[in-house]
Amino acid sequence: MIALLQRVGRAEVRVAGSPRGRIGPGVLVFLGCRRGDGSAEAERMGRRIAGYRVFPDGDGKTNLDLTQVGGEVLVVSQFTLAADTRKGRRPSFDTALEPAAARVLVEEVCQALRGHGLKVEQGVFGAEMEVELLNLGPASYLLEVSGRS
Image (cartoon, rainbow, N blue to C red; front, top):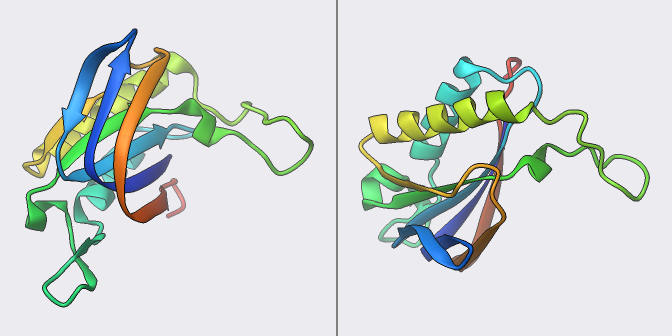
C-alpha cells in the first residue's frame, strides 16, 4: 500500500462539480493499493498516517502528528500510485489491486484513522475527481506499507 501525504491548510474533492469531501488544516492522502495488500496493511497504514509527524512544533521542527494538532484527513483513492514506472514510457498497472478489493481496503484505512479520533472525509472511489488543495510547505511525504515492513 502506498500513500502520498500532503500537509494542507485546506483541501476539497469534487465529483461532477459537486463537493464530496472538504477539510481544513490537516493532511490530504492519495492512497493506492497493490496486489498483496490486505487488512493488516490497511491498519498499519492508518496508524502510520495518524502518527506521522509532519506538523511544526513551537520551534518550527516537524515534531507533531495529526492528533496533536487536531488536523483533519481527506482520503482520495488513487490507483495510479500503484503503477510500475521502472521501464518504458507508459506505466503498467499490473501491480495495482483489483478495484473491489481496493475499495474495501480504502474504507479500512479510513476506519483506522477514525479509530485514532480523526475527522476523515473521502473522495468517491473510482470516480473522476477534481482535487483542490493548499499545500503548506510545500510538504509531501510518500509512505509505503507492505507485508515486509
